[in-house]
Length: 563
View 1 (spheres, one colour):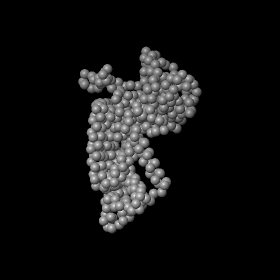
View 2 (cartoon, rainbow, N blue to C red):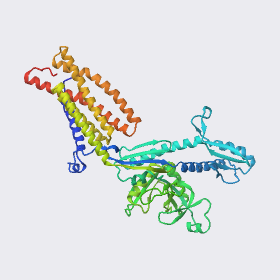
View 3 (tube, one colour):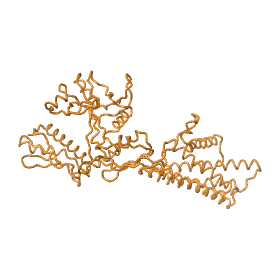
């Protein structure tokens, strides 16, 4: 156990040196690191919201908008189902009193229409025979009218699904900004708490995560302009939308391709004039649909439409505007980004969008498109900036606690174990350096609970060394020689150290997997600390003891009792 080959010694020393080099940049400011040679590591550990401050946003999903959109979807499903079944209606399906009402043109089709529309229902919370409820209620009214009404269970399930999807979309958008360790959690039925460290101006953050960002492709009317439609009558199946160039466009209400078929979007620059553009790519379904549409409509214009949903109107200070009833004023923000002419069939499934964009706007648009559209708009109901003074105070308190605790541990180990206590202190110091180095390399964020995890790791590392030394003392009391006692002490303590740390590591991994925010910060430093503790307590300490034994033997050919 005490024999080390040259390559093992070189490996252990190399790992320790890498740990020291990787951890040292965290003790210097960023300006100092800029002057370092290129071959030296300069990556630092990011600080969490509680240590460096940042943005704190509480978002609320617009349930009314979600319900309205669902009713619109159900209305389209009702129309498509009846059309597919060749059941003609007296009039188009209409939304009346938060329900869809439709009347078959022929009374004889009433029973068949009712049966067909029942197939639109989905079971919520189980199977139909096991107590599950339906998301839609289908019933017949007087006058041969069929009503399709969303149930409360269906609405709640839709809201729950939408808020979960919104959390993932918000997380993707914030990750695209390059922010580390954001805390994004659900609060209540329809709220999302977003905490992002290091953000001083939350406006970009709000612009990125607060808009629905749905991109669609639709045809422009082939012969009539928006101005002509305003003077006469808007044709059936068309709508007028504002364009980014300041005018209006008469757009077909039917989609060529929806944003769901976009699989990638990247900001870039046009090779011809260097203006900012956004390149996009469809999936196979979208590429085929777009290819068919452009092949059949060469020479016709199509519009690229950006729908940001209902956007809260704000005053010059950024506060929401309210109407006489006190409700927040919202405006539907939908516009035509570009309306090019189809010169030839576009069969590759890729393209680019240009316009009066800045590089920052194209980057934000690409992030929104890549992350997918939000199911409903999110309103910011609480906004705070956590000041850096909180982080500074926390860091100072952590440093003070670490210094006091470190001095106490060093004093105890030297008093109790003498030279071997110094070996343990060296191992603990290398342990901390390895933790900092690994966190820097992994890009982890240090939080206040994370500092607590490091302090706990120091205690565990010292405890491991104490366990080894007590085993050695026990073997010496049993009459073994110092060399045999040291070898036996390390051997017997290894199993106990591994077993105890393995169970703690499992707990740390579970906390990282299931936890979020502060819990994850604690789990990261604890898990890394356990792995480095086993290495330093058993390998580094054993190497120092082995080198000490060799030096003693060469000097006097005898080994005194170490403890």
